[in-house]
Each structure stands twice: as structure tokens, then as C-alpha cells.
Length: 146
Image (cartoon, rainbow, N blue to C red; front, side, top):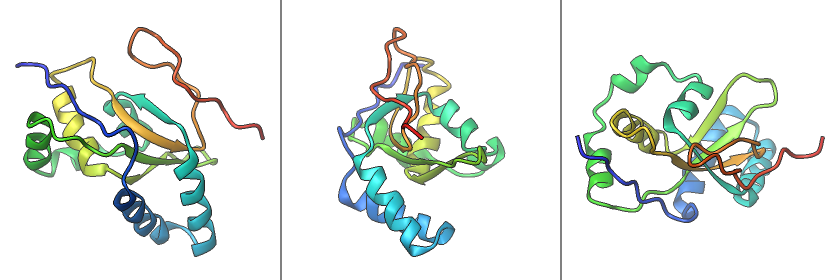
């Protein structure tokens, strides 16, 4: 199968943050949710393989396989620019929260199975310190001071 280049927007659009806020409001009290969104908006962009994000979010592969991602995969094949995935990292090591972009992430994951070099663009709070899968270059992030 031919490798598919994924066209990511350079930053999330306002609607992505609105969706993230709606999702996070189900998990956190309003004040905490607003604070997370404010920090998420200021967080640097990074890139990680979709499979690693799904594993770190503790998403079951049966959940990924249960849906038809063909619409989102067609957007990727058509070269449509996708908004970065919005991620919140929990301090208690209970897994990443994919605040927005779960459908894009799963569609990308299924396409990634045929393209081992593909990475997902994401915005994460608190920032992670990691190595990109491309040429071992450092991702432009640092771990926040505690």
C-alpha cells in the first residue's frame, strides 16, 4: 500500500479548543477545566506516533477497531489539513486524555499501520520531553519545573 502523507495544520483552530473544553468539562470542575484549556492553548506543538499516543491514553485496540474511520481516512488521503490532537497529561500517571481529535487519531493509527514513519501532530499540557521518531531530533518541549 502507498504511504499516505498526513497534512497537519500548524496549530489547532478555535473549534478544536471548544470541543476539548466540552469533553474536559465532563471530567473536571469548571475552574480546573478553564485552567487546563488556558495552559493547553499556550503549550508547544510536538509530534508522536499515533500508536504511542493511543497506548499512553490507555485506549483499547478493540475501541479503535469498533468504528469505521473511513470518512476521516478519506480526508487524510485527499490531503485535507487536520487539526492537531489536543492532549492533557494527568499527573497521577493514569494515562493521557485525548481532549480533542480522538477520531483523527484513530484514523491516523489505522493508516499508520501501513506507514511506520507517520507521526501525529499534537499539543500537550503539561509538555512532555520526548524524542521524535524522525531522525532522533529533539521535540521542542521541556518538562515544566515543579
